[in-house]
Structure formats: C-alpha cells, structure tokens
Amino acid sequence: MLRDSQTELYNEEYFNELLALEQKKCERSKSPVLLMLADLSAFADVSERQKIARSMMEALSHIIRDTDVKGWHVDGLVIGTMFTKITSKETTSPFAPRHFVNRCLERLSSCLGVERFSRIEVSWQVFPEEFLKPSAGEGPRQKTVLPAAMKKKAEQRVGLTAKRLIDVIGSVIAIVVFAPVLACIAVWVKMSSRGPVLFRQERIGLGGKTFMLLKFRSMFANNNSAIHKEFVRNLISAGSNGDRAAGAGPDGAYKIKGDPRVTPVGRMLRKTSLDELPQFMNVLKGDMSLVGPRPPIMYEYEEYDLWHKHRVLDIKPGITGLWQVAGRSVTTFDEMVRMDIKYIREWSLWLDIKIILKTPLVMLKGNGAY
Image 1 (cartoon, one colour):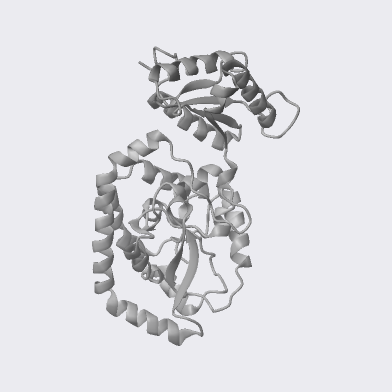
Image 2 (cartoon, one colour):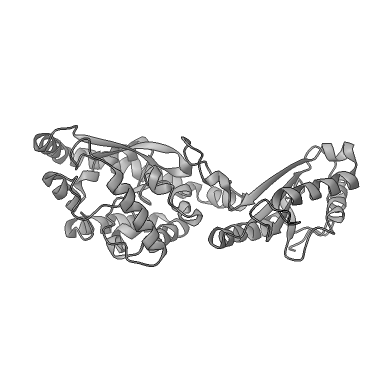
C-alpha cells in the first residue's frame, strides 16, 4: 500500500523516494521545490496525530495542487508536503516562497486553532538548497540525509566497515613497502629546489568536512595559484558544455599541461603519480580511502553545479577511483563527475578491489598525467 488508509497520505518510503527524485530533477533544471515538514511528535496519541494530519490536509486543500505531493516524511510523526513549481525569486506571485509560506501558515493556524497549531513544529526547505553554497569564510555544509538514504547507509554498514579495515591494512602495508621510495623521493625533492618536502593543501572530504591533504611538493615554492583557479573555472565550464577536459590529471584539482610552476623533478613525480604517495597517511588517519572520488580544492568546489557536489558529499574521497582508471584526461568534466557518481551508486568491495588492481598499470602508463 502506497497510502496510509487513515490519512490518505503516502507512506514514508514512497514519499521520500519521490522527494529524492524531485531533488535530483531540480538540481539539474534549477526549478525550485518547497518542502514543508510538520512534526506532530508533541501529540502522544496516535489517533490524535492522524486526526490533525487530516485536518492539515483539509486546511491546505485550496493551496495544494495536483503536481504537489503529500505524505509521511517519518511514518506517523512528521508530515511532508512537497510544493513544486515555486517561483525562485521573491515576487508578488502567489507562489513566491515567502508569500506562499505565509498563506500556508495562516490556513493551518485558522483551521487547527492557535493552541494546537503552536504545538506543531513546522519547518521549510527549498531545493536547490542555498545551504550547499557556503557563506564567505565558511566551508561547505553537510547536506540533509533523507530516511531512505539513512536506510541504505545502514544496509551498507558492514561493507563500509570492511572498506575501512582494508584502508587501514592497505595504507600500513603501502607505507612500509614504499618506505625506501618515500625516503628517496623526499631527498630528491629537497635537493631539486627550495621549499618543504611535503605540500599541504586544504581539501574537501566526506560531507563537506575539510582536511589537509599531503603530497610531495612538485612545484616551486611560493607560486601563484591564480593560473590554476582560472584553469579550473574554464575546465568545469567547458566540461558542462560537453567539451573535452584536456589537461585533467589524476588529481581532483586537475593539472595544467606544461604548467610553468612545476619543477623538473615534480614533472616526473606527477607523470607516475608518485607525488600522491604521502596520501596513504591521509587514508590511515581516516580523512581519505584507498578508493573514491578525488577531493577538490575549495575554489574548485565553488564552481560546481549542485549535482556535481554529490561526488564530494556522499562518500569519502580516495587516492584512486573509477574515472582515474577508466577515463583520466580523455573525458569531459561532467563525464568525470558521472563516473564518480556511478562509483558511489554501484559501490562494492569487489569494485574497490578491481580499481586498486588496475591502478598500478595506469600509473606506469602515465596517460593524462602532467
């Protein structure tokens, strides 16, 4: 049964599936959707909550349209009403967000009475959501997780625990095995040019949390990042228009072919991706995984469309990933993001193992690495 027989509201699972689908659609179309959540948990009696739910739907019957969706966001406790085709800007339109919200609240208060209505916690959310766009000096905020997504994560918990175990064991083995190589590269970098051996850069990880990514320094010290910011802006714009992402390397920040800031030693390290070896420390610490999307820089993230951001917010970033072994520099930016999202949706331990096994060959070939 898709509907609750007592209230005629969609059940929790179906309503949240529709909500998730509408979110994905509006992220691409930029056509806003307004979500009203009414928390009835202040009312202990189940039958009373059902009666209030019916009264609320009756109160909004002249406002709710055929294209709108109403159901249980949390069965028996939180009512969700999804209003589509809402005007995105504040205008005199009857469906402008503020005007529309006020109309709904007035109808509910009038129908339920002030005392009963005051016990209902009503919240509103607009998709595409402005909370995904950080304010000045603020990192990206974590996105809302719907019950359906929480259920899926719960089902994957055993697999994710195994993934973390593989990350810890794999990174420890890699650090021990590559210890002589790490030492030699450190000396090589130090002797080649002035500056520190390791390059530290703030990147964005799971849920928008920032961390300090480690790499062997491959550039001259105190270089200007403006050239790379402009390159990233053009790359993402070109990728969204379907142009080839020439110059996109295995790093999530994307590398400029013939970058004048790169040292001769750094060029060789980048060609073989050996500059990425210190990131096994990031994996051991828990900021990254062996396999996952590459973590972007803040100014790269700020250029993303809403749907691009799922590659960052939905899973822990990794040293290698699906598009690194399948596409690297021969895809558009949007195609690269789609590969990352494909990895997230189809994730399994076996997929991780296949990507890990393919990575050494890709490193040796050096295709698309600059």
